[in-house]
Length: 566
Ligand SMILES: *[C@@H]1O[C@H](CO)[C@@H](O)[C@H](O)[C@H]1NC(C)=O
Ligand SMILES: *[C@@H]1O[C@H](CO)[C@@H](O)[C@H](O)[C@H]1NC(C)=O
Ligand SMILES: *[C@@H]1O[C@H](CO)[C@@H](O)[C@H](O)[C@H]1NC(C)=O
Ligand SMILES: *[C@@H]1O[C@H](CO)[C@@H](O)[C@H](O)[C@H]1NC(C)=O
Ligand SMILES: *[C@@H]1O[C@H](CO)[C@@H](O)[C@H](O)[C@H]1NC(C)=O
Ligand SMILES: *[C@@H]1O[C@H](CO)[C@@H](O)[C@H](O)[C@H]1NC(C)=O
Ligand SMILES: *[C@@H]1O[C@H](CO)[C@@H](O)[C@H](O)[C@H]1NC(C)=O
Image (cartoon, rainbow, N blue to C red; front, top):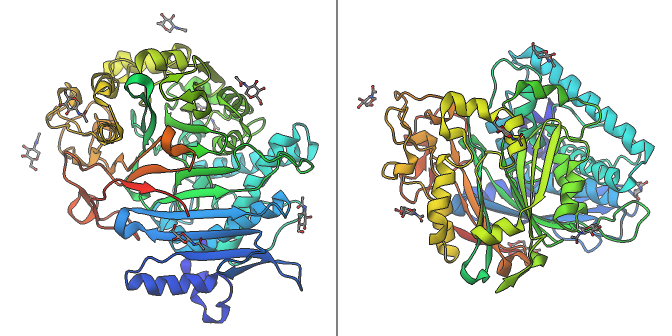
């Protein structure tokens, strides 16, 4: 693929030093001297040619503009704001948003692709049977969605799908220095930047499409989340910790302010036009997932997966919309938690199977709070989605914890969890899982923001009895904590299943917002594996120094920082 090789990009070609591409070169030079100034790029319609054009700096006639600040060496985060103008139609805005984002983040995009995606169904592939089935699935799925967009049933829904795909197309075109707004039909490269969006969907597609070596390790956790009412209901804190492969740690905290309408004909803006979320280079959604939305909703999830092979028959390319897209559409269109669930539940792909938690801050008042509609919980597996209002349970227990095990018994049973409990024990159960017990024991120690952050970053696996695994040698296990550190498990230990082994995997961040902060899209965030009670992760001193980690800091010892916006 053309974009895989940096050498083909015109930013290396002095004769093509125009538009925002030149900014990239300047940034490269300035980053050699350690400065972190912002990069700004605008997309506008050229008066003479009528064509969408990119230029360095802010222009008042922007269709979209981006402001990017790279502080990865200082805080582990870079920051991106993309704003579009309602003077132009939604399609042009969406494409331009993708284009300006790629222009200011192209260096990180290249590095992140190399670190995480370059070999995936790439030129030297050895899973050629699976890759062919995957490509076929993606193409048929894109074709089916194209038909739905043309049929114009449910125009609001399909308008947002189209905008998401146009944004992706703009991102890829701009990266390849081929910005040209497609006014009619357009295609999306099946193995291009679409793969960046499909990270979660792929985990399940690999199993559904019979890949022989799966990326997902048995029992491998993917995220911890906690919603906590402080004593006297005076605050409601919402926090998420990503668990991921350490090669994924090039991070961008994003804020999108898009002036999209509910349909091409409508005047009224979508409820979720402005969103702040933790993200990655080349990802136009969160992926973690953690979102603060202008609708007043905060949405997040932890992955529950599916361990029942009989359900893979529900994963089909027709009648399904991949999870990343359903997530984006629900974030944009939903006014409240049950509405979010209704939009998200359409066209269940059965991929990226998660427990979603939707907190509606408009239902929260410090000191007192509504009895319903404050917390909606949704669980998806192939062929089944269960949603319930869980406000009462949140009020009774003062917390809701999420740790990769289905809450709804129907989902737990259908997705094959009982067999895992039978085979491996309580670790796979909803109540006795190590994190279930740690949250239960420790949540009452959370009385303010600092204690919340301490719990989310907590990993004292050498000392904490709840981190022990009886069937393991040694018994203390770095996976069994709110912020996992599987790299700290000895390579020569014995472990009953894959998740408990030594792996380059664990907590890679922490995000938290509150009633006081969400309205300004503010949050507190830490980047990199936890190092509160354990040594900080350092590539050069780890067993994983040989894994590609282009653009990463060597030592991941960053504090929690406030995230605000200009
Ligand atoms: C949006 O605006 C662009 C540029 O003016 C135009 O080419 C396009 O046809 C318009 N409508 C849609 C739906 O793309
Ligand atoms: C995967 O393997 C199962 C069991 O052999 C088979 O039933 C199913 O059709 C296969 N799926 C695909 C997409 O090849
Ligand atoms: C949620 O939003 C939907 C769509 O606007 C609306 O029909 C429904 O009444 C709302 N529900 C609540 C509980 O406000
Ligand atoms: C789940 O399975 C357990 C054990 O077989 C059974 O007791 C329970 O009724 C099932 N729950 C549901 C909702 O199917
Ligand atoms: C969690 O509880 C244990 C046992 O009481 C305690 O030692 C530890 O400090 C607590 N950690 C946090 C972050 O609350
Ligand atoms: C694993 O290796 C360490 C040293 O690297 C050694 O001290 C320990 O005894 C070994 N454990 C086992 C179970 O072999
Ligand atoms: C871009 O963002 C930085 C960091 O938030 C801010 O200091 C700067 O003013 C912004 N630039 C513009 C043009 O708004």
